[in-house]
Length: 251
Image (cartoon, rainbow, N blue to C red; front, side):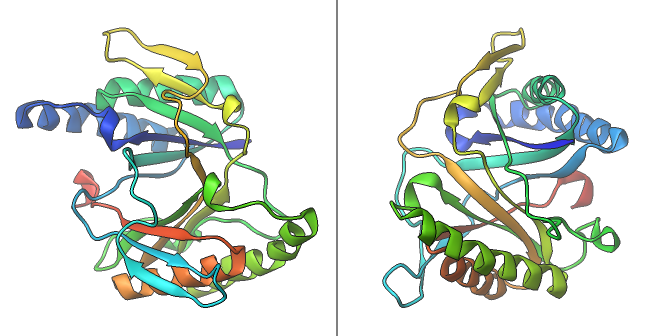
């Protein structure tokens, strides 16, 4: 099995009337329910538009957690789905289904494999994600990592894994994973023409692209910011934090 990230940037959605967006809820949720029934969905969620964004950066030697994005960019993440499937062809097919259901393009990239002993997933007892807590995305773009020696990267691995284990032990980890760095391995699904087209390469060529992410389920934004700081210190590069919106079927 291999894990794939299917995601879209908010700017790919396009301008539509409110009625159009309301009409996409049922078909998009139907695809999510199909993936759940097939046992291949790890996570699915849309990021909350207008919610506060914060960033954590420890590259100066001192941890700084600030309001606002780490870098202002023309495009930003709108939502994502993580699936665990046997083949890339399956990932392509589901990306096409999601693109049809939502009504806007999707991009797909494979996750890296994890070290032994790290599941990177929420425990079975906490699958729902309901209640009073909120889910937050903590993520970085590959270009924020910087240039370092191989020895430096090797030294960060145990530190990052320790934070992942701490999140698992605290019961707040939903998912954590790093994406394969070769952007050429990405592919895109677009159904806006009325026909599903799945093509090799990213949907849009951009200067920055996602490098990895963690999803946490915590009681407060302060907790999310604290964990983002822990991750930034361990990894050695900045992290950005955004809140997920409630799924329509769990609101």
